[in-house]
Length: 606
Image (cartoon, rainbow, N blue to C red; front, side, top):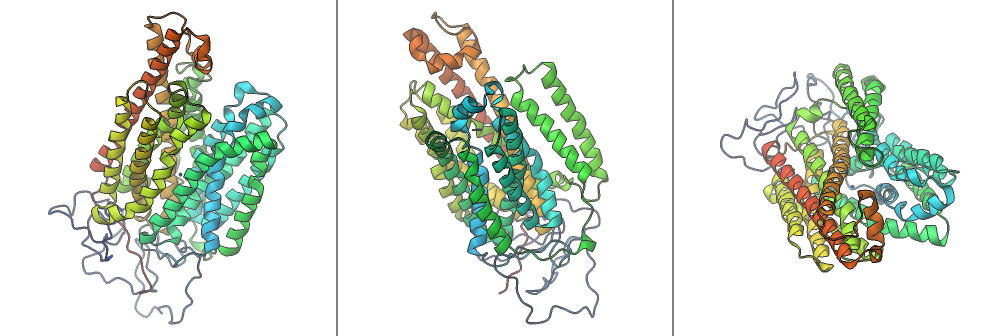
């Protein structure tokens, strides 16, 4: 259980006047700014970076563009000769220092990528998405074979922790060493983790090997999203991102069913063994078909291993406190307070280390640039609000509506049908009103849909929450994809991995915070309803509620009805909190993000 403010490119792609430009960025594409908007909302350039002056001549097609702050070549420098061979299909833009742009310069997508490369990326995304859900339905068989019922939740928590805390590290490494080696390492580590999971001899070993899987999954999740932006020009990125959303949606629906089928028809170990041929195929296709220009060793800065270790430790302590707080121990207990205090201390250490690092894992510009900071915060809010439909909707469907596991899964999964569709169609919206405004419309609609859940009658008919999930998926498809495409388009090759990883990291942290926060809201609501219950026979403690919901026939009819009403009220409060998170995301975009994302123009072989 619990993957362009304006495109700032008009239909014709012609550049407009400079406004809200990122450091060293060329001017955004056509999206007229209101009078006086030239300075307001401008992302401040780093020291020493010169903003391009009006009338600066753009380099001709095929000319390598200097990175921000690089001195222009002197007269007499030989330009690339005619007849230079263009990069082959499937080649990504070169790293900074090899003739491509640096952090704020222009990069050139290398035409339409090879089909095998796209297939391998989708396969890699499917591996990560499936392993987030496929284990859930096999838990009874795993626990029956290996034991360890009291700690089985770590099969999910350990995997989530490993994926989340490694995202920023892999993002920076992909900007430093290139996407391909990081992706190959991630697939190899994921494959090794899957093999070890299949051979696990007890629950402790299985949990440890799930963490190994997660360490590989972090490289897959972030690098695949980054490569999707590297391989496709701006106008075609919605198509590949919509495909990625479709893969994730399909995996979310198919994962539990596939896990249950393999566990019952074969053996639970096959839910890990099935990854081996898929990972091997992705490994072979990427090795054979994806090529990157060789990076010059002389232009590569030192790896910030101290920062990587600090980020890993800080993230691990924080997420451990959020995931286990209120579950394994009370929130105000020594373990929770100790973990939170330790993460705060490590966060202060990380800030100090990163300020001194030559190539920090978490560079300060991720939060100094308004566009990236706003998207980070908005995606954290998305992670938080997604807890409501993904975690609590199945509980509502089974406990309140009386549906079985399959029916509850169908109510939740209809959201995954509409999400990819509106994601694919969102380009037609943001090309007209901009990336930011498209996302604001999407999240505004999502807030209304989430709030509408609180207006359902009790008891509701199953089609009513299903319709809400369908509309929610449509609204979030219009919200997420413009932000992902837009923020990736504001940075060059050398910063895209770090930017993408920061966005995904914030979404994962938001999900962890949301799970802890909304679970506390649910528990408080149910506890209050039980304390004021006018009927006898209800469970006295929250720990007994799950058992009572699983066997409602053991309760008096009036007590069962009251308990279902308490659960319905708790889920209503959760959806109300999710709606508040959606409103917060909209406010962040309106108040923090510039109206026009500073999209970098792309050199084309026109």
